[in-house]
Image 1 (cartoon, rainbow, N blue to C red):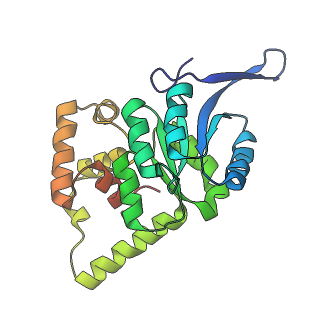
Image 2: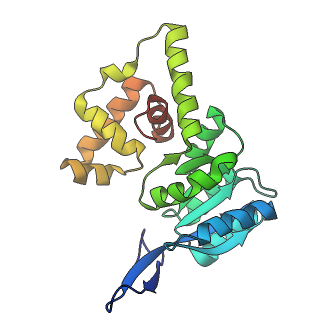
Image 3: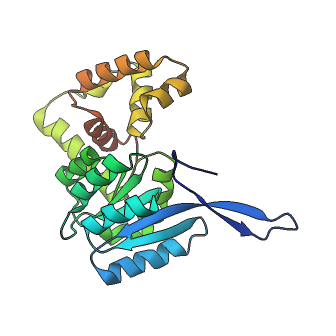
Length: 238
């Protein structure tokens, strides 16, 4: 069995009556330059029966090399690593293994950092001080093809958005979207491709692409990363 293109998925057998139960495991690479933090996160991940940590890296360059060697489905990257930071490592990993899902670990609850991570191709952004609570959900969510953000990040972005709307006395452009555009906005923000959205809504890819262009224009956004950030700020996705 394979998941996400050609990436191998580990299968494990667990007793369940006479027949037994087969559980597919999400293959994970963990990268953090702090040994104690990395060990703690690995212990947390290893406790999940559907996870398998296949490799660890202590810097960004090593992470890129190990991804090419082990082909994990999910990579958990510290944003501030030596030799190659998490943002640049994400870009290099996805240029070689585009089906890999990247989860960024960060100490920065800042919109600028979140946007940089999204533009690099990361699917999740979680804070280190909430990693134990959020990491398991983040791995499962991105492995399922969706995006995930620490609740603290989502709350911060939403409050900041409301404050900007109030202070600048501007109208919410979301009201300009049609019901179909709002539907497509959510699906794209969750990480769906144009083709996946087209299949779900029984539309042509051309139609979905046209809707996406209209959404970006109406909301004054410049690409999917900004669209995802907008959706988080609006509380459309979490």
